Length: 287
Image 1 (cartoon, rainbow, N blue to C red):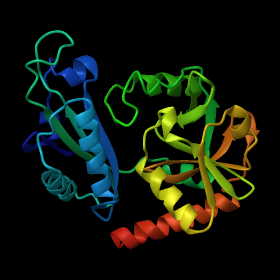
Image 2 (image 1 turned 90 degrees about the horizontal axis):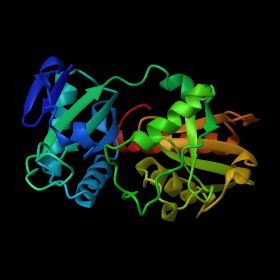
Image 3 (image 1 turned 135 degrees about the vertical axis):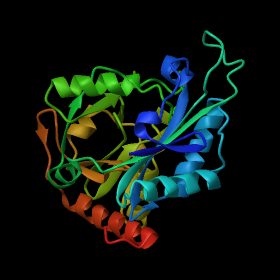
Image 4 (image 1 turned 90 degrees about the vertical axis):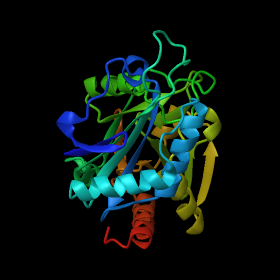
């Protein structure tokens, strides 16, 4: 695999970052994960806008312009001969003085990589995933900027490990007031009486790009969508549940703890069709 490290395309074995890099020491960085269809990144502009906003929120200087990052992505996909792929751009604050202060850390580290799609992607999309309620709570938005996709992922890692130990695929995370927020890597939707509900941004969820698109296509199709606060009772009382992120698109949920759901339910099926149509329209692919 070939990876872009700063300004150079190198084999994976040569993509070496200093152990003194703040991304390694403190999780002091930002990233974006994207999906490429036939070597075209879906919603590239939206992803790069969020990367820019994330970096600004953490006061990290991006070393490349959005146009340059777009060119870099194409170069990495071409060099690795990857058509359908997962693309990840990561920027850390780089090296600085010892300790948490950011003074002197003015040369960011930039890494861009592409890889094949997850082996279990089709299975998850077809048979759905199992969610488990995690005791680990979502970090509140006044503790870390919720809109920033930052490299400190420990909160989600701990929640996911809880779920895995209980036999689930992913974790449902609640906030301190026991409202549903996200599943560890992305956003949650529930359907009831042909109406969609998804946690409101004010609760501190990541503003998912796929989430926003699903809200748009649902409303365009005449489905009511409500962004609100709700707890586990609403989740367990839903007729359908699905999750969204850039790699999986829409993925049905077949169970939350012991509660089972249809996979996929009629609303989820309709939205999958609409989402795939939008992907085809934007990328010219057959997905």
